[in-house]
Image (cartoon, rainbow, N blue to C red):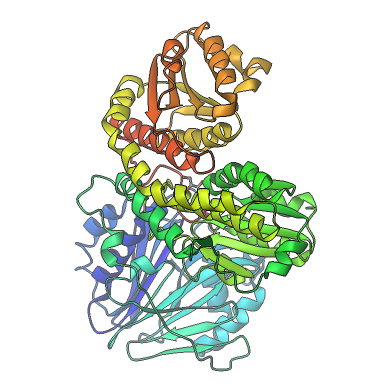
Length: 608
Ligand code: F6R
């Protein structure tokens, strides 16, 4: 989704802004632009399409002279991707220039109001309202203008603002949308995402709601909504900048897939203390967990699919009713959560607005909230009672792989942790899980070793038009993720079905040559899956089965079998997902798709 970067220093701003925007490309975008304070005016340059177009237009920034500026990558929400609609947006008098992430909900009313005052608009965006509104509110004091303008704005925003009269400063504010300030030597930065500025500084802080930062080369001052100075705590980012580089791989996605053994180890190990699982919760006590009478998981997309895998595991180990809710639906569905509900919020980015709203809704109803988040200090992490971090490191490919795997690990462990406290899981089960977790990285590495086999199957089927993924129980939850992975990066239509549901309608779509990927790793229902495979085979389907090593009978019914190491039932999903990720990756690569940045998608979904 949209990305923001800002720079104030003595070096030329444009090349630094372009480089920062490059780091944000992974978030997904359709146009890019920058604005630089240059000789008493604000110079704007923008281009539709890839960042390379803007680099070409500005000769890698060399054409724009100036040491203070803001840049933006836009993911269209209001108005088509076009030159006019791309950011930055200037006020009609050239006095104020804005880059914006988020959505202004009352923009039509504000536009009508400003038009009535004689303001002329050129774009279809909600962002242009902000620059015009700031010009309307400006009477010589930028801080006052920003304060006044905020009073009119409804919705969510992270803003980088330039005032022509203050060529030395960037003004930054945010509401429900992340903004980070980075501190350098004789230069300072702002960004929507720390990766944009990591090359220059690791010393950062996050702007909280209501705060405003004024950023110049020598100083950053922060005030709260009442104009009082705020002393921010500076965090040292410990991420290795190289972790956000491709490191010789063709795509981030394959690099991230191959990192999974290490990620699993990093996520599990710190939570195994003296042979016991300890999730390190700080606010939700053991007593609280004993008092819970139901669990509700909320998340979006792949994180929701993690919830679907976790549900039967939580039920089995905690003996509690568990629901898994799509965060985008949750708030509007009068959810049945209260003080006896433990809400588990899952989010890689920690910024997904639907998930954040669901969290707020659950909290307002008194639920206890623990979030499972990858990005340290993100909005969801900050708003949760307790946070369990997945130590997956920066995930750059839009399609999640390693964060999904890390989330699974946390959920297995959390289920056991709660189960042990409630005495619904035994010490023996805890020992078994720990043994599985210790051995899992090596088993995942083995599953990854077979990547050429999966690549071969991808080469047979990459021109498929429709693909069906089928499975039962946990295999069905995995099928949901396998199908999403394939469709989002290869643009092949695919659906996941609970295998037993096929005959209630969908099987009518199966015809000669339809590809069906049948997940048969859930041992208790393997025989049922064999019957389902026979059903689709007899209607002409080509079947790739995913099976446990040793299940040779599957090879009698399927056209191809991918075997995964035979494994314990709880952590088996961590192995089964590997070939599905690889299959999606190789199909998309063979089709020549933009694997890391699929069309229309964004890494961090900060609009509803
Ligand atoms: C799919 C994918 C998305 C995200 C979803 C939630 O590969 O990555 O479906 O899982 O947008 O994002 P987070 O986890 O950041 O809340």
